[in-house]
Image (cartoon, rainbow, N blue to C red; front, side, top):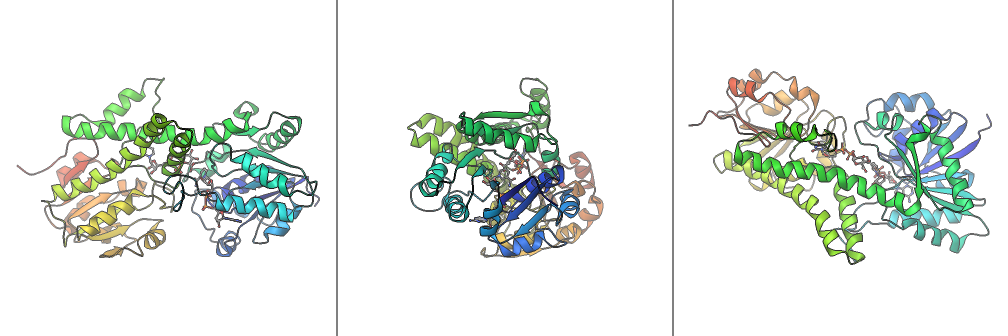
Length: 459
Ligand code: NAD
Ligand code: UGA
């Protein structure tokens, strides 16, 4: 079959894989290829066991793979054929040199720019899908233009807003698609090409077009605002625990104001995930580099509050368990940074495990999807950790359970049975406020939610 256009995506990760699968499904007349340097990842995309767990993704991939969706490690050939190249490589926080711990590490990004130049022999549209510092497109253009042999590259920004665990739904029904382009004739023409792709399934009024720099910056700002809401409610949760107020009631009362809105006000052990922290720190770094110290400090507090919340959670466990957890088995229910994903990047569970091991606890970890990643995350940590797919076994003989991830199945467990198998007094620290605290108390547990009074049997 003759395809209308060839789309290439460089980077077959949590964004590149699902996004391209949905584009391929919705645009059968386009040929979509996803390439990566990671051969194992590409092999997995081509197998029955795709490399990431996302509800509904398996079905989409199986429907279009080898029809108009292809996964490959042949990056040069992919670049050569492509008319439109999405770049969706990782952009982690820099760990070395200038800006270490804050700025975006753009080495993977820059490498792709050089590769695109090296293997191109016709004009192309380059789409920034990765999350990038504002004005990165300028750097990309400089690399592309400095080398092009009369070949024209038009750079667009098209940040991704999908959340893990709901990626397919978010891609099917996005609140908005954002496309940034130069407001020149060439820029607007490239913009139209990209709008045409999304318009296959996204209502036109939800496709927002802006200048390049607004688009790049909007992505960082969107994540910063979302994370800020969580840090705001988490700050209040600490106050609730002192004042006998209930943080869920406060979230409801405050979120019922339509100007505030109800979403993203669930107090928790802290936000995780590969992006919130890195994107805010990137924003902080950018603000600092423009000499805007107050702006930088304002946003930095969102991350600091999150660290405080995680630390507070562990301190509470130790304090309430009579100031010692040494030699005590503690079961962590959940290791993923949120439910419905196996991803553990920046999961609060990592820091909680580390701190509990420092206190010499025996940590038993259970999670329906994230145990393999948990093992990798903790491989260099010293201490007693066990991994147990069955939550009942994880809790067997434990002194305490700490709920780290809001998996639906944890709500439906038989806690009478769990209680019977645990050491007494038995503790539950619900880092997600998902369990029925009153019922647990009646069973005999001492219950410590986030941002609510503890329910204990102690005098
Ligand atoms: P990821 O680490 O899962 O995937 C990135 C992939 O790029 C990896 O498989 C890596 O091998 C590959 N790669 C790196 N350099 C390469 C190169 N030179 N050539 C070919 N492949 C290369 O990352 P991700 O979670 O998909 O995130 C990608 C970008 O999207 C990041 O900028 C992130 O901030 C942003 N983002 C992520 C999410 C999310 O939910 N994970 C959501 C929105 C935006
Ligand atoms: C987030 C954004 O929601 C996406 O729009 C964005 O595209 C993505 O980052 C990105 O740029 O990577 P994600 O990190 O996958 O998506 O998941 P979220 O649902 O935002 O959750 C992030 C963290 O916040 C999780 O640890 C979650 O448990 C926590 N959270 C979320 C809370 O503690 N309380 C809430 O009310 C909501």
